[in-house]
Length: 111
Image 1 (cartoon, rainbow, N blue to C red):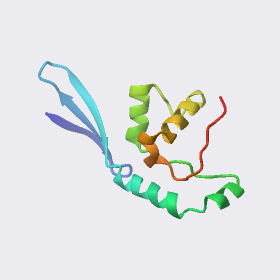
Image 2: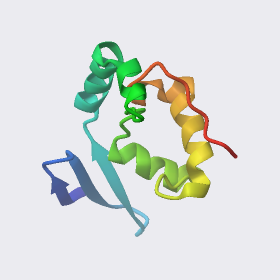
Image 3: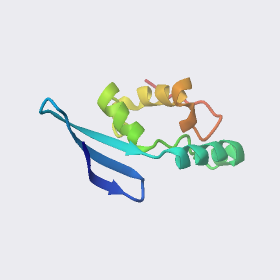
C-alpha cells in the first residue's frame, strides 16, 4: 500500500511511501511531465533560436524533476555538478531524451 508523503503543486511531483510484504519499503517519486514536454515542443518550433544565440544565451532543454532524480539515482549523473555536464548533454542529445530539448541546435561541452 502506498501513502503520499509529499506533493508539490508547483512542480507536480508527488513522493510516495510503499511498505512491501517482505517488511522492506520503497520511496517513489512521480510527476506528470506532459505539460513540460508539450512546452518543450512548442519552444522547439516557435522560439527564435538564432536571435537567442546572437544575445549569447539559449534555452537548450527543460528537464523535469523526476528525470533529474532518475539520472542521479540510476546513472550517477548529477546535473548540478560541472564534472557531470558532458554526460548530461549526451543524455539530452540522445534519442531517448530528445523531448527535453527546446532547440534544434546541438551543443557538446568541452571535456
